[in-house]
Image (tube, rainbow, N blue to C red; front, side, top):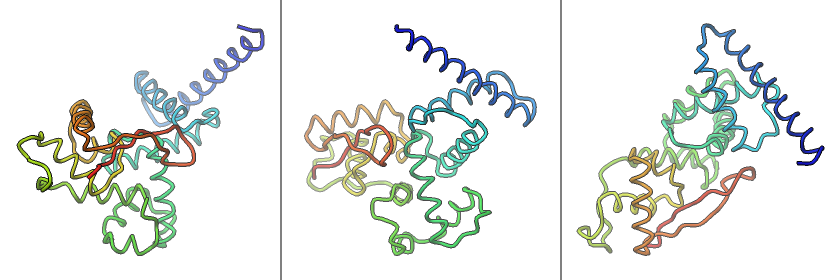
Length: 226
């Protein structure tokens, strides 16, 4: 490692130590916080930093409260396996919808989501919010959680029930990522991955890379070929 590299590495370590110390002070102001809770929050913040390509977590207070807003979205929409790129996009869309629906600035994210859910999808689409809206897609998928009928072009006996359900979802709402499919079906990640491999092998779906937002790493998308 060059001298410059050593200096840069030491600066990174010092910056991370400062950020972690700031987080500890921030959390301990909220009450009796255990060390493992601090570490879990720190790990989550570092994941957010990596996925959103943030240069640092300074100022910590600002980034911590932004992280809490993203986690509030995750919980309110029950998106337990969504990554921070998707949550950030949902955050942007929720703020936009708050303005379009003229909701009070004081409304919490949970309240905004509750009010949006009280609107019909036709009303939301009429706002010209965008047909590629991730939020509208999430709401559509959650509404579609019901028993699915097999596709007429495929013999049900030849396809696993989960495969058929995933195919129906992709036909109606694709392209989607694997985490989105995990969220909407409530099925274990490993089972979803196995089913996608079977569908891909049968030539029923296609897999490709794409970006959901202008910022962030490429995401793997799946879509039906029917």
